[in-house]
Amino acid sequence: MKKVVITGPESTGKTTLAQALALHYQTYWVREYARIYMDHLHRPYEEADLLAIAKGQLASEEVAKAKASRLMICDTSLEVIKIWSEVRYNRCHPWILDKYQQQKVNLYLLCAPDIPWAPDPQRENPEDREALFKRYQQELKEKNCIEIGGNRQERKSIAISAIETLLK
Image 1 (cartoon, helix red, strand yellow):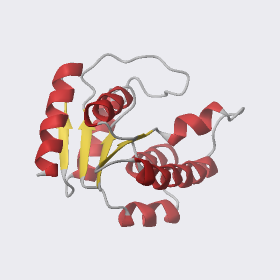
Image 2 (cartoon, rainbow, N blue to C red; image 1 turned 90 degrees about the vertical axis):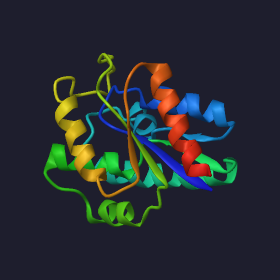
Image 3 (spheres, rainbow, N blue to C red; image 1 turned 135 degrees about the horizontal axis):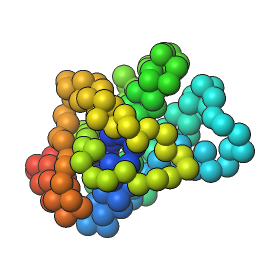
Image 4 (cartoon, helix red, strand yellow; image 1 turned 45 degrees about the vertical axis):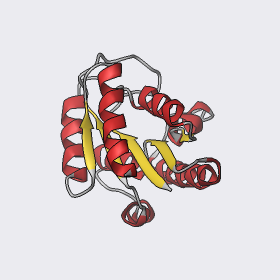
């Protein structure tokens, strides 16, 4: 099983791309657990919530392994929580760091902030997407990572090409 993680700053088309790729490959995709968690949180999130979100994300990925075919698409993973924790709190919980180092990801698809910002109650940084994108680039520079940009069709095409190379 190959694991592909779609990642990047807020409002860069990650979920749209994850859905399109899962449909294209007829496989299961793992939704961003933070959205599910935050939808049920009736207060502003706190630093401790990031640990719960990380655990929920990994649990969702484990469930998906049984449902996916040769390919599992993840709409974000622990790198997002790590970066967000560092940006928001200037640190990251050791458990998250440990699990992030242990996770096996075959390919990261890093979505560029070259599409318009779409407002959403869970989004916080419309002005910081470019700076956050640079953080992702730095974080993933030693990993198998392809940058994804352009319109929806261009993004999908770039992603499919990268995945096809991975599956060979």
